[in-house]
Image (cartoon, rainbow, N blue to C red):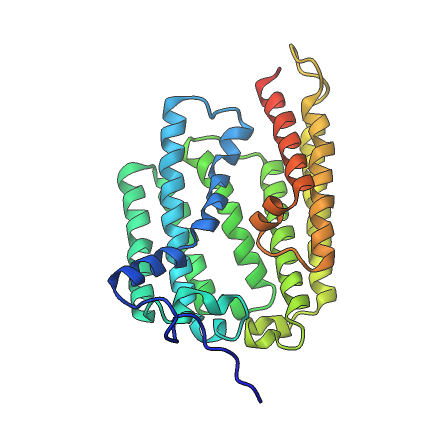
Length: 312
């Protein structure tokens, strides 16, 4: 039987293990490509029309930086714990820790240091609500890395909660009340993408899923399909109820932009569901950036929503 090729970094052509190589590997392990997810911190202030002031922009930039540090801490600890399993995955085997570019102790130490620094900095520079959300996120995600990722349904819930906390923290940092419809739409929208990603992974890794994510052998593709379809429906319903709750055309507005944005939001969910159904809905940012139609629909929704917030 042919042996699989050695992971990058374990052979003569792999990345170096010197200080510079380790530093670059740590940066890669912190997932810069995932950092745009933390822009969700502006979701609640944007929904409330509270983005355009120096105080709001400064506070949100700080919250974005702190959440980025916290999420990087989780990625570092996660990759340190999953190094062995990642070596069996055709893509994850190239991650710096699995490939041997970053020593496991270095990943642990950097992840825990960032995990301590983020809430401490928040305690000095932000309010108690920001500290509580960051600390709660870190505790939950560290628990996920250690054991919760192996508990059915709980694993989906924890990952979804991470997205929901991102969306909540910006509003809490600025003292903005969070709408129940905002929380429902954001929470179930996140569950839709998380379950679609798990479903796609289960389809692509059929027959060897247990080697890369043990819990995938416990889920059936039918169950994961049910979860993302249910979540998509609830997210669309929550958004539509929020949009209709505001009534018709606002005073001074040309058109009912908020209600019109329902069309773009629903189209975006339906378009994303195409990739979920095919089993190709991997990282959400990859799906959006590599599908021009979905990107255009997203920009259309953003424009309509912006007009609604501006009351134009």
